[in-house]
Image (cartoon, rainbow, N blue to C red; front, top):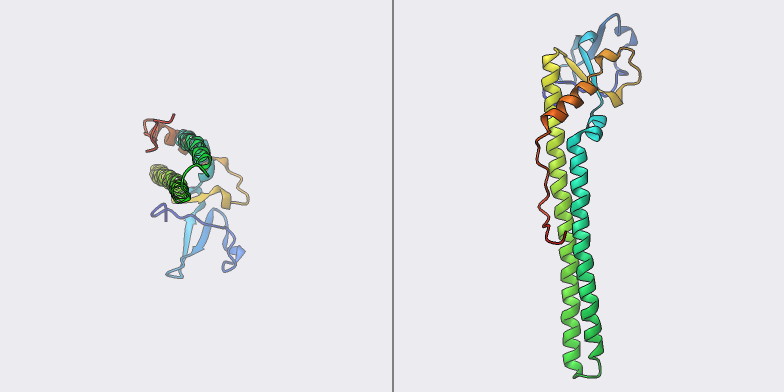
Length: 202
């Protein structure tokens, strides 16, 4: 669970609950573990659009830009290597029938091994880049989840529901998305998002 002590209810419609149990300002839910009924004051429910906050947040936008920049650097590095390899390949092919066949085959074999080494390196660099940014993304999500919990406690909200799981809600005052987004941008304004990709090819 991303948010300890905060309920993310995947749906307000549960086949095990009689619709007549939804009355006035009370929402009756069943605990999966205890199988007991519990009433929650609907006035203490908050709704948050987690995905929208991530998409709109300064931190996630900065992360996306850094990822694209790092990916361009890796591609530039690979393109340089490709040009060098093409030149080297032409040199080796030009030696055919000019040097002993054994020497020629030897050079060709070493060249092919080097090409495989470059390709393997490129794959590893890209895998490392993806892993690095997935880890940073996870930290940003965890930080956002923690902030939602803090705000819900401050506002004395008992239940926070993901907006994507809501069919209809008529009271916009329970939507805390904008408040969380502003607070999240403020909290992450000094966050450093840098990849470990070398800038020497930039």
